[in-house]
Image (cartoon, rainbow, N blue to C red; front, side, top):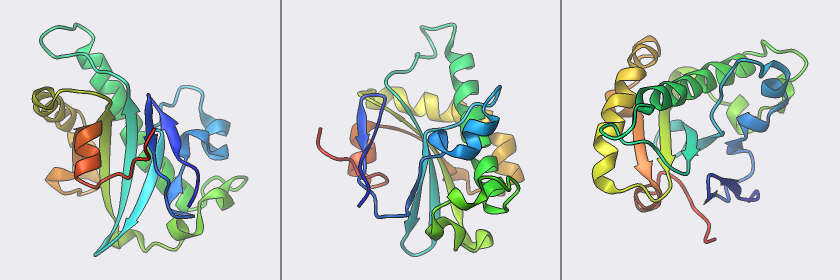
Length: 175
């Protein structure tokens, strides 16, 4: 198991070796980061069918009815998730020759046409009734990405820390 990842006051992991790609800290991203927003990390889940969960973590979120920054917040999250999907595929295809070997071997070994992608926002301590409007709006922002990549309608998820732990989409360590 690799060490847990600490983001936005939450502890993610540990994950099996090679099943986490810390894209935000990757050499590829660091080489091109100027003007590009990226999510925190990718998790490879291999159960029935391989899935790559693209994870963005936040310690809080504006509420649609109380914050003028709600739309900007969601657009930034959508950009990060979409950019992370694109950057993963670019690294997988070895488009960045100086850093193409940094992708863990389980990610490299995937047959991309068999992989399902999930674009996931996890918000620490977010109330359950605040999640559906956030998820609906994030799905609207990611509609083009979902269409282009032919993702399933449920591929965009907004979870709080408890729901992420309960649904076993993510493994959390005790803090």
